[in-house]
Amino acid sequence: MFKIEANQREGYVELVCRGPASLASFTNLIDRIRDGDFGDETVQTYLIDLRPIAGTIASLERFELGDYIGRSVPHLKIAAISKKETHSKLGENVAVNRGANILATDDEREARSWLLAEK
Image 1 (tube, one colour):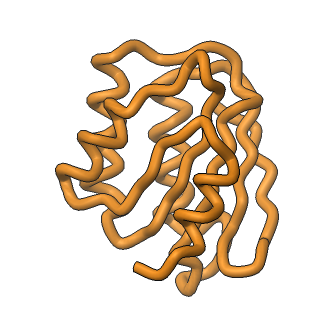
Image 2 (cartoon, helix red, strand yellow):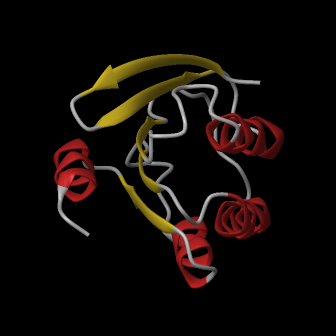
């Protein structure tokens, strides 16, 4: 599982993840967000920094993760930042198609701007 550093920011919680990439680590992260491990029930907005993690997951796992996000946390607004070399929109597209409010990007400025923009 990921080691996660949580920081309360103005308007959102920032989560910095470290460790090896695996579908289990990602779904555990989503479960912990859903269960309120990083804030109380009023926290609805998260910035997830995945750049420190090692490796990536396969395309099928990205699809499964997107489906899981769409089913698990459709009520939350989440921006995820990954390294340029591991970045993919597959999981985001699947999650959004299932009702999630998520952005996957390799640009930190874009993530923060999108996260703090009005819905």
